[in-house]
Amino acid sequence: SLHYRSGMECEFYELLEADRDVAAFFAEPFKVPYYYQGAWHDYIPDIRINFIDGSTEIWEIKPANQTAYEQNRAKWGSMNDHALNHGWVFSVQTEVGLGKLRSKIKKQQTTITEDKS
Image (cartoon, rainbow, N blue to C red; front, side, top):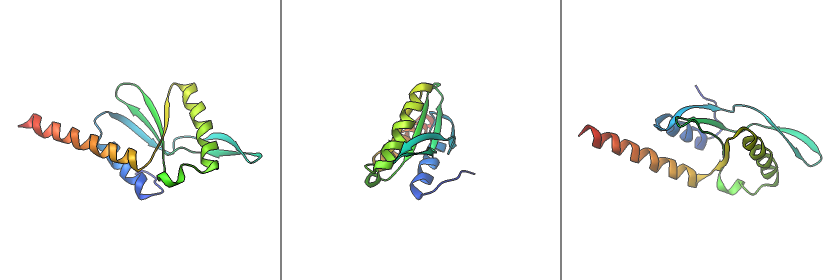
């Protein structure tokens, strides 16, 4: 059972469950401090994904219309630095990323069907 705050997050989780390249993923995995408007705050990214190739990615899931918010930029700058220090990749996934993941899963499922033929 995964905690999600939007339908978009839920759909990403469902697609990651089906992704053959994903070893495991974790919702809201940790906190990272960030500085904004004269004070320190905690940022909790949406997903940590461990891939079968050994790589790790941290994803924030946001509608594209929220990506320019100043506070989000502060959070993501700190998260990017944290990710780089751990050898991870950080990215913000919007509707575009959701569409790409849908296509990837569809191709994987097509390949499975073709392999069974």
